[in-house]
Image (tube, rainbow, N blue to C red; front, side):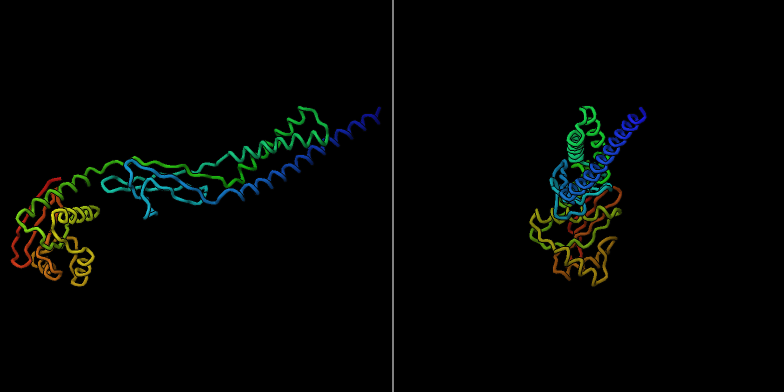
Length: 290
C-alpha cells in the first residue's frame, strides 16, 4: 500500500514539475515574442490635427496648417499640441498616450492556444487542464506584453478655435481709420509706416499689417518694412512708442517716401495721422473705436 502511495505521489510530483517547466518554457517564449513584436512596431506615429476653422498654424511645425498630419515619436509622456490662427485665441491640448492593446491580445490568444496544445500533446491532458493551462499563459502573456509594449499611441486631435473679438474689432477699426485718413491724398503716393504706438505688443503686428494691407488695396505704394527696420536701427529710432513729427518726416525722406503714417492705439481707439514729409503738414487723420 505504501509503495502504491509512493508511486502516486511520484507521478503527481512529475506532473507538477512538467506543469511548472511547461509554464516556464511558455513564459520564455512569451517574452521572446513580445520583444520580437516590439521590433515591428514603428518608433514614430502620425497624428492627424484638424481645426474649425481650417488654416490654423501648429506650434513647432512652421510649414504646416490644419488639416495636417504630423509625425511624432512614440512615448509614455503626454504631448502638448498648440494651434493658433489670426483673429482667434490660441488653444493647447494635452494628448495622453494610450497603449494599443490589439497586438497584446493577439499574443495572449496565441499563448493560450500554444499553452493548451503543449499540455495536450505532451501529457494528453484533459480539456479542463488544457483550458486552464492556456488561460494561465494568456494572462501571463497579457501582463508581460502590457509591461514591455512600446505600442503607445497618441490620439488625433481637433481644435474648435474661439474668435478673438478684440483682435477682429481692432482689425476692422484699423481698416476704417486707414480709409478715412487717406481721402485727400493722391493715390500711388509712396507711404512709410514709421511708427505704431500700442499698449499691447501683441497687437502691433495686427495694426501694422492691417494698415499696410489697406494702403495697398487703395492703390498706394508702401515702403518695405524690413527696409524701415534697418533704417530705424541705424538711426536709433524705435518702431514702438511716440515719435515726433520731425523724426518721422526725416525717416520718410530717408527712404524716399512722400508721406509717413503714424499710428497710436490707446483706450480702445485707433488714431492714424498721415504727414507730408516735405511740407510737414498733416494731410490726413482719423480715429476709430474698437
